[in-house]
Each structure stands twice: as C-alpha cells, then as structure tokens.
Length: 227
Image (tube, rainbow, N blue to C red; front, side, top):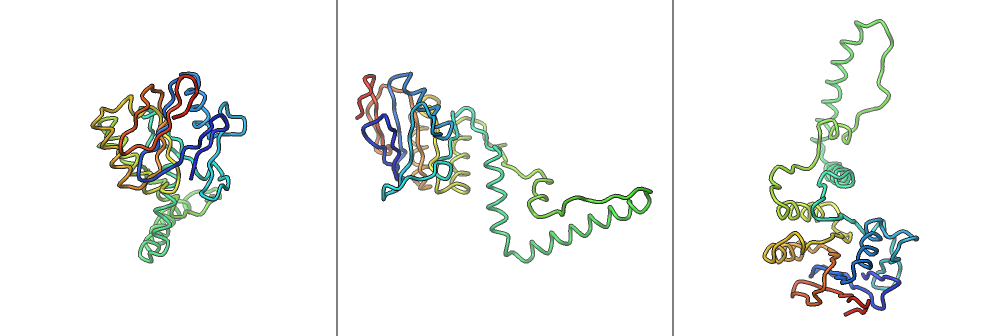
C-alpha cells in the first residue's frame, strides 16, 4: 500500500515492519498535511492525498485510515473504538451456545420482573425495542479499562494494542510522537508496532532528515524537497 499526496513527487510506501514517518520541516505544509489527514482526506483537502494498493487501485480512505490525532488527546473510549470492540466481541460469541442461552435466560428474568410490576398499574405499558446482546453490553457500561494508563507512553501502548485487536488492517495515523516520547520510549513504541504488525503513520513537524532502523520515512525540507 502507498500514500500519495498530489503535491509531492514521491509516494510514501506503507509498511508493517517499520513505523512509517512523514517528517515535514515547514510549519505551514505540516499543518495542511496534518489537517487533511485528521479530516480523513476529503476531496477538498488542503493537501489532497489518497491510498493505493499494490496494483495502483485507489482505496476508499474511510476503509483504510484511522486517524487518532495527537498523542496527548488519545481517547481510548472513542465511539469508533467501543463500537468496534462490541462488534468484534459479539462476532466471537455469535456461535457460543452457552452465551446465547444465558442472554436469553437473562432477558426472560428481566421481563418477568417488569411484568409482575406492570400488572399492578392501570395504564398500558410496553417496550419499543427487543433487547439483544449489544444492548446488554451497553447497559452494563462496556468500554475500555484505562485505569493502568498512568503516563502518555502507557496510554499509547494500550492504544496500539487496541488497534491490533480492532483495526488490524487500517493505517493508524498519529501526530507528534517524538514530541511527547523520550528516545527510549519511542524505540520501544516502534518495537511494539513491529511486533503487532500494525501499519502506523507518524506525521511529525521536524527538521531531522535521519531515520532509524525501525522507521520507514519521507522527509520534506523547508524548500518542499523530498528525501
């Protein structure tokens, strides 16, 4: 897969055995690229771009890109994450006969409790929806346990583990990783991404054109020249 910006001469190949880094020296260009990615690369992007597969077929961005934004604002209970977690969990349990039986039993018990109370009331009452498995999970407050995420680094590690569970085929875009991580933390993050075989895109505003062994990068200098 590759990411092609219409204003760049070269494409950034997206790999899973490295962290993919788009490092931009000019502040204005960085801001336009970051905003375009954050908005999901719509047709009217300030810096238009698209993803292509290995056969040069354009891919639908909404199916390929998960833009998480700045490291400091990662929301592990974002609606997209929780909804996908429910979907994945239920798909794994769909053929679990004991799970289905227990949900049905719970449903009958709840209905019995309400029925016993409703018969003592004069009005006509009822429920507009049938309760299914996903509604039970939402009722129980199903979500992501963030209690162990004491630091930016631990939260970031938790985030990429979630992405491996829930969005393993998408390109995960993050901004300003190097700004908030120490060198040792960044190296550990790269190793974790590689071990999970995730496609991570780090968009950075930086003047350093050097890339490490665990980075696959493109550097755009102050004159908009690519290296």
